[in-house]
Image (spheres, one colour):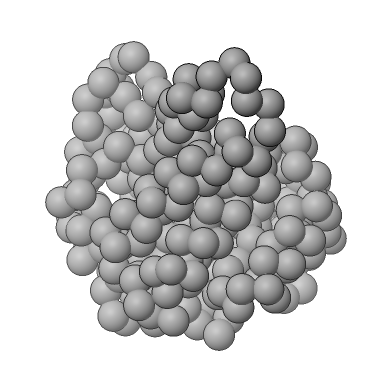
Length: 284
């Protein structure tokens, strides 16, 4: 099945396709194992920083290799591409999907840049974004206050999708990048309004899913979200498991594969936890 087909299925059946970010081979291996064990389709993504670290073609080759070896339904996404040039490089390298995020620009500039990528894409699935999401993909010792005007307007969302021709739409619904001191409270009614304003063939995406309470996630899916992004919780799991493994193994262990084993297992279990929450388990 194609990415578009999986997203349509998720929307029709009221579950969400997981999107997990990875920064290295070990994280990707854990996500593939999670997808295989839970029998779930997954999207895996790399931010611009992660792409610079791993390499564009290297990320494509790794995903293709795992897909062929394990037979998993896995799709590679260029997450938060901050320019048309960055998005085009991912398309040229063979990414299955590109998220062009020009939400920091004016509406007109956002439409122009996003449409440029859509016109360039070929068979690549394209996601656009409209609305303000504060924070960073890390643990943040502060609170965020969102105003109603920070949220995505349904009429603007419909106009944006109509003028750009994107396949997926990401909005601001009270979600915050990273994990903050206060739990994000999603504006479920706004999600419903945006979902209603868009045509059925457009997937509605929730970014910054880390730290959002389970009940809020379930309500968001029921309101029309069919794709949820998780990054910070995986990064946190990576660091915690690595620190525990280094402490447990002691100063005499130097074999990376022995140190990294528990890290892979920890990330796999965290991913399976999210897969079950999103309702994508046993879909393959």
